[in-house]
Amino acid sequence: MGDKVPRRTLDSLVTQVASELMGVDATTMVAATEDVLARLIDHFDVDYAYVRHTDRELRATILMAEWPRRAPIPNPDPMHTVSFDRPHFLFGEIEHATEPILTGPMPMCAAMREAFGWDREISHLTSAAVPLVSRGEPTGLLGFVKAGERDWSTREINVLKAIAALFAQLQARVVAEEQLRYIALHDDLTGLANRRALLEHMEDRLRPGSPGPVATFFLDLDRLKALNDFLGHTAGDNFIRTLSGRLREHLDPHDMIARLGGDEFVIVPAKPMDAVAAELEAVRIQQLIGRRVVVGGESVSRRASVGVAVGMPGETTVADLLRGADHALLSAKSGGGNGVAVFTDAMRAQFELQDDVELNLRGAVADGSMLLHYQPEVDLRTGRIVALEALVRWMHPTRGLLPPAAFVTVAEATNLAGELGRWVIRSACAQFAEWRRRGLAGNVVMRINVSPVQLVSLDFVERIEDILRLFGIDGSSVCLEITEHVVVQDLARTQVTLRGLKRMGVQIAIDDFGTGYSSLSHLKALPVDAVKIDRGFVQRLGASTDDLAIVKSIIGLAGSFGLGVVGEGVETPVAARTLVGLGCYRAQGFLIARPMPADEVEAHLSVGRIPLELDLPRVGRGQTAR
Ligand code: C2E
Ligand code: CA
Ligand code: CA
Image (cartoon, rainbow, N blue to C red; front, side, top):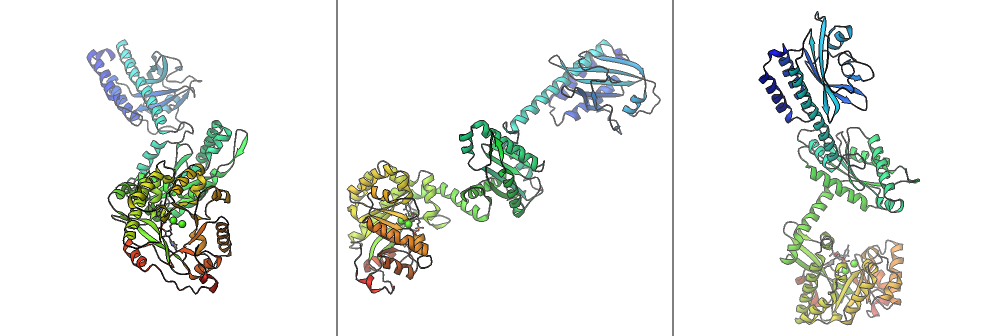
């Protein structure tokens, strides 16, 4: 029949097939191929058509699509995977063929009958197998089978070759696209999913109607950097690869395991689980990772921290879930590493606050929503107010009055500490000067907390000098408080700054003394006037003998260096009495007075004393304050 088909129809057939195959990708390839095969069967009046793919590694030809689909498909299917080692009844020896192979008519045999399931009375088959050729290499086959006899004209064969070329292109393109897609979605070191694949997967899992809750684990290997440093990067890479393989092997094959780079992994288990189940699973994963690995001839183990968060499809966003797990990880790590932490509502509140603080802090310093409270410090024997400590507060537009713990660290982390610190010093001095003008606070020292960042800023001393001059305050009425660990961190720089302050007579106190690492030698090297005993020790005086011993030795130490000493965190009469008994008379604490707004302090300042009912032993009363 071949020559009966007019040339124009044949040409337009190729064009049609070309356009049908144009937008096809891996997911639509089979269906589109079947459509084309159906059209070709019609056109060429044959009974069966197929496209096969050549697998060079297997050395076999594999069925990709056929039309019509055989039903039932025999099992095993003699058409599916056909090794090149043995000539096949249909397409003979095609491993290296690049030209069409026309066979038949050949007598119908049992093998053919079985392969096609044709039970009609058919005596002969005719077949045409046209190799798909890509860059000179056969990559597959486009084939046709006719029950009975059929001739193929040269023109028809040429058209089939053109269509085979289209299929060859399609196959090559899909393979390339799949490779690109693989690269785009996988981490090249471990072959695990990468960030992009993880996000796609989570997007899917959190779609409304998907099964939930969905757990997410954020993993981080503790101190991997040390491993890289000591054993080299290749060893570090091998270690990561081994761990990845171990995860892949021990987890459900459907679990999403992604590496985000470095030593960060995220796992999204396929099974829905609540927070309780997720925590158990996280512990299991953590133990899995903790097992030893041999790299570079050394047997090493790295402990891991795991942050866990659980979300609900339709409610939780991918970003929220990941951020939750990340925050939980931070909290697991801050517990010293090797921990598992589950993201809680309390953590959420904490991190929301932090985000919010970061967002609003800059404006707050400028727009007047910062304020100072003042906490009196007294001589315990007389109740006389000897100092005021300025403590910063933030009147937050929606969260109310925030304590420094909520924003000072954020300020330090975001370069705002300098600005905030300058505001505090300025405002405290302004208030102080005003009180003095009105005859209040004459013998009182103003204590101001200074953040580490301020101390190392080069113009700190000049700024203080300017402010003191502006408000007419003498340096010795001001005491700057610095925390102990700052002193230890940058001794040289701190020394320069402190000496400059001393030249103006400004006093220096070491805050939270006893919690850092300063040794006697540091104290000797720095021009310090006083230490404030950390409130942790003072609070437990009367309850803890350890703390009593520490407080005793701090007071002794201060005495031997000629330093003043202040007890802070005095909450109970027994603590106050103990301090007095040990010779520490200056104190601050809720028992005496809480930090309070300026107008309330004024009332106390005008009296000059805060009376205390301490029932002190006689020895204490007679002595004078240091
Ligand atoms: P700090 O310098 O040790 O300040 C004393 C803190 O202890 C204050 O907390 C005060 O309210 C609290 N306190 C006082 N007496 C007691 C007591 O008897 N029991 C207990 N449990 N606590 C007591 P606050 O105001 O929340 O300040 C916390 C920390 O924030 C301060 O600790 C200080 O390190 C920092 N800070 C406060 N204001 C500033 C500031 O203007 N600049 C800088 N850089 N840091 C500041
Ligand atoms: Ca302080
Ligand atoms: Ca303190």
